[in-house]
Length: 321
Image (cartoon, rainbow, N blue to C red; front, side, top):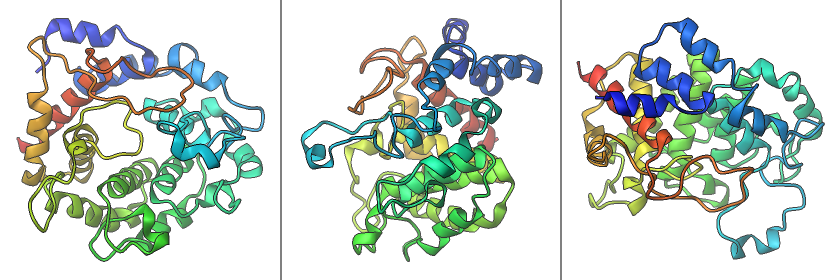
């Protein structure tokens, strides 16, 4: 599935990516990829992102938005800022940084950080499903007891099995975007803590997506939106084909079950996007302020997209076998 030139290209990368290539694609011994992962807080993108942390433990002085963000003009700017605490913690966690490198960050955030929504305490979460999903996983990673927020997801799961960030405004129909973020956060929580009490809720959410073949409306079979075919890194909040393929293959591996056949259409979208040289291209760019670019421009060969695609397809093959 991976030829020598693509392998070498992927290995010629930042430690945040290289260690995952070594572990998940090349089956290197643990001492190899662990040594690479240990470099994340010391050099490259991980060290750079860590260097922007404020003394009080936050980034950009805010929980989900930077300090001083003008909400009155939010609809007038493209995208949203991705520099504040929750986005930065999520990136560092997904890159594989050792939580110990962040020291007492969790305790400092418990004191300093409050949600922009109703000034709620940071580690308690707020009302937005996607925000709470990131917070759940990030807190578990940093060693906080996140069981109260984990229980929040089952309590706020909609009758159709998914979630919708607009539930607070009365929505009773689930959203692809909210649901993929919820199940990703719950899976990360399970993997980090070993707490399987959320597994049934997670699987109900996955069933909501799989019943719709990860891309269509249950009522008509029509495609929900063009974003269901998108291959993009970083994932950010929206649903995409790569994000869905990444999650359902990871969940099947975690649960020790065969990959659901209803994921086949999305996996085929990922497979077909492979270029003749064995690489995948960056498919989109979510606009918004960042500390520094996390990947290449749209249309360029992307190491991150290539790795994530190869890993999803590899997991799918292993699950089928």
